[in-house]
Amino acid sequence: NSLNFDEQLKQIDICGLGPLRMNNALIQAKALAEGCKLVTITSQAGSVEWRTTQNAGKGGDYGHHMSRAACNMGQVLLAEEVKDMGYPVLLLHPGFNKTEMTKKYEAIWEIEGAVDPSVGAKRVLYEVIKNGMEETGAFINCEDGLRIPW
Image 1 (tube, rainbow, N blue to C red):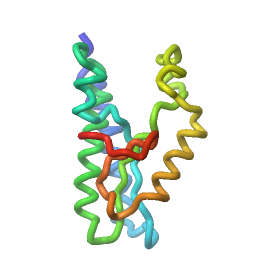
Image 2: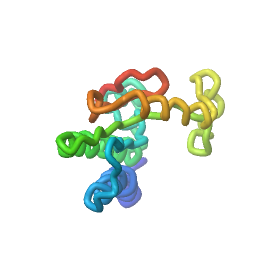
Image 3: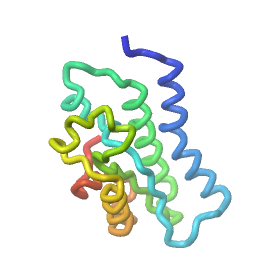
């Protein structure tokens, strides 16, 4: 029984709505510089399609996956809303990084190609610099620059 609805709602509130709250506050306050990009660090955990592969036969981790999917949907909708304002909205999955959050997977870090956070950060920065209005609303994997399926 992996259902803890209070905890899952908290995850959705923080991870799903948090980035939308932040971006909305910046837009409403007119605090964005000309030419800026609204970038959300999200996760492939929000890919519904990839859940059928990575979580095949086991499900679980509902709050995490649902919150990331909610985050991604919110940012795609925001991308459509602010397109005419000239702000690209990018959704970036930083890849598999060796962090405290992923330490429970330490045994497979090397097998799965996990990288130090400094490498992950450079990958993110590369995608931020490279992408703009043509990719607004796109869900990009910083490991390879490819789009992640919804």
